[in-house]
Length: 363
Image 1: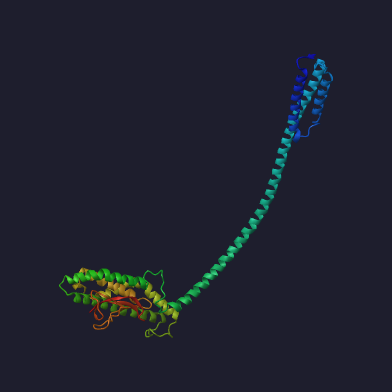
Image 2: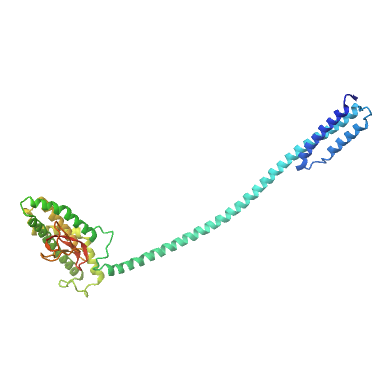
């Protein structure tokens, strides 16, 4: 066949297209190893050289149809072959990659399973060891608790005996709570009773002395009962009707403390009997409602004060004409440096440790 017009340009364009196609395939073959990829270039070179052999002076190229068809068919067949080979190779590589990934995962799983088994054995060992140590700790804790209890008992006996500075904070009837209630007695019941007495045409001084007299009488009665009860408990413990209260040879310190604790712990259970004795010594028939409530509260707090260890005492010791002791007393309605009379007693221990200031009228 004769390719007219510009046959050389036509075939060169054809060759350029084939060469571009071959370049694309070679680019894909960079990561594959299929046959001999250089063979594509050889086909292009052969075709290019064959075409150039038939070029005449006028620029026409004469080439047989069968030859051209054979060459182009061979090139395209080889190109198709290369493309199929690339697809098959990529598919095989993907399959190998998947197989390799799967094998890697299997190996990892096997290693993890082995590691898990090792960890399970370690956990079992540590659990047994933890149980053993826990049992040992429990045993030591029991021993420690027993020793601390014994030590606490011994130390408590030494510290608490007649020591006003040591108090059981869990005790709702401890001295600080009783003194707080005694202050509330002055603020509430005493004030109400005073107003009630003033309505009977008593002078303020006479009304105050009346309320102070009730408190003194009730407190002294409770003091007598508390001391008698301690002596009775003491003699009952040692089975001796004549054992004196201060006989330290007859009683151990531990037993003495137990007697004091028993008296304090049973104070409110015994109080109804104490209250009955107090009522018999006070003429309640002549008392108005507010004064009677005041006397009842005085009796309860006086009893609790006297069963403490050591007992609390009320200090009325501020005689008229004495200098005002501002460490123990606050003034009532008049300021001054000299005592006129005591309105409300100070609360102290027997060793004169002050718990709460009293109130006095100065002049």
